[in-house]
Image (cartoon, rainbow, N blue to C red; front, side, top):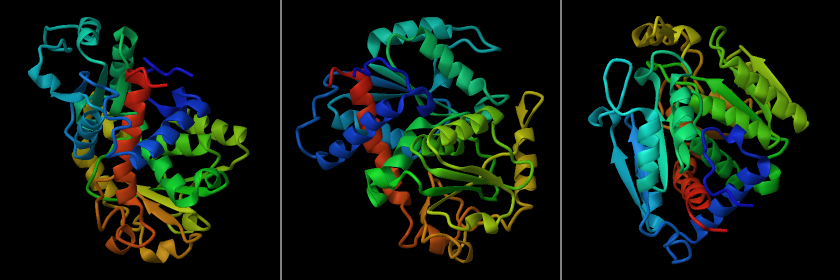
Length: 339
């Protein structure tokens, strides 16, 4: 199948077979990383990276990916460009997307938390670029989804369990407390892709910290289609029972956006009131010798204790490395003539 030109805003938009193609290619790219097999896939091609928000792994991994495929990744900050906004004149998204399509082989967009006034604005912006672009638009994390993180998470589980051993395993997606106001993107992507690959999913959080109802329904449907279970729990201890992998991460309360503004200080004060929601060694004892994962950066001592994050069952650094490999595979399949 040809995936050239296909946008990646969420893994839910892709078929299971298409996702499998990315993951299988990513595995081979990891094995062949320092050979010439894929060294000219993006020869003389440029990938534009729009960073409304800063990053650590995202910029590094995409720049490395483009370089290792023989291309170039160009860092762009929208604030330094003459783009139209609600309050300023400038180039429209339609015009910008069409012009940049003449320059680049693909466009990545990262827009999170404080760069939007309400949940969904970041996703809408990515969709508008995708509507007008003639080259693939890739979400590098936006308010709803983080597809490359989801792919890296799945590659990490397959590395440790085997390709065919993921189905039937139990994911505990658990809220972690801390001085944070993090978007839902990594968490929502995790439960979507895990349920697509046949995992049982338990989502655990303090009462009130609900995610997007549409994403929850999609996850339920994925589980039904794959003969898997889906559960929501509000107990910070019992939810660990029988888990095969624990993914502890903070996410913001739905009320954090109000009147077109991110109320970060209010959310931090609220979240710090749940210190019992930390992943620690005692809770991990209730699991099925579970792996621990996290998309990073980790709020150590709040989301998870150091002995768990640094323990022998932690795969956080493997998953972080996988961002490079899955992004290389995604770029190769959508931005080149690789078959």
